[in-house]
Length: 309
Image 1 (cartoon, helix red, strand yellow):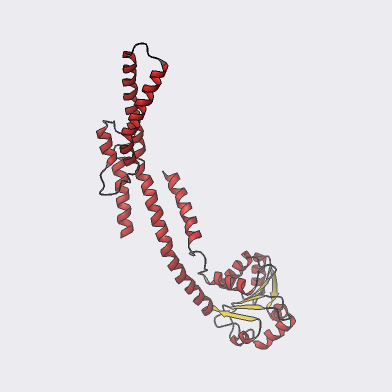
Image 2: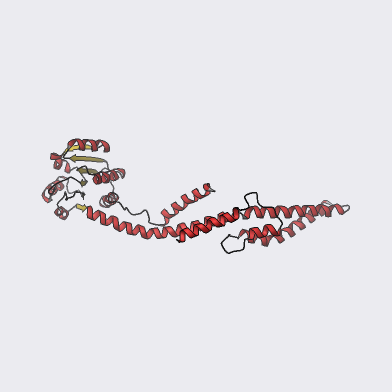
């Protein structure tokens, strides 16, 4: 039972991801930064990230970028030992804080999270860096409080500047979209839960159908043998005809009750055909607990009460 339930849950999760956009938009600031970088650059392969400061948010953003193909990371920090430590963690290069602008031309993505009383980079410095880079685009992510980068650098061609407010706003918009997709996901889950319960309640039907067929077949065989025993000089052809005739009659008689049992879904308020069929055909209780059928209906009833509340 649990084996089937787990496998169905995996299949439902896959269906939700394939049929909805619930996982299509980033909802963390770090993930949004990665999505924006991938929009600006066709690919993050062979790109370089520079961390200015060693704040937790910038570290997390760099980690996400590294996971999406960034080739190298340069780390600069006022405390050089911390830059060395963080660079070692990323397999990157530590740079003395006072030499930051010398290495800036290597960076495609610049993440700032240093503590500073004023802007660390302004339009003039970035203009010179762009000229050295032959105007290749640069993506600045300002996570500093107060801000590390002068907002005026955003007016430069091939410069894209986002601060924490921009990233948080994009993340909030993505969260709203995910919530809308979650409603679609819930509908899929409810549909699949209903399918599972139908299978679950049908477990009572199968042994009953088998028991009916076995009992009726045993009766047919006994009566057939009696009839054949009373016939004299019976030919093999006669036995074949009688066997086919009685088998056909039994199948036609059982067709309607067995079809009803197969389509029985065990829903609340419907007649319990399984119990009725066992009584009508005078069958023994199933090998499993006689309370199984009731227990399944009880479980299903509890599930519906929980989901409705």
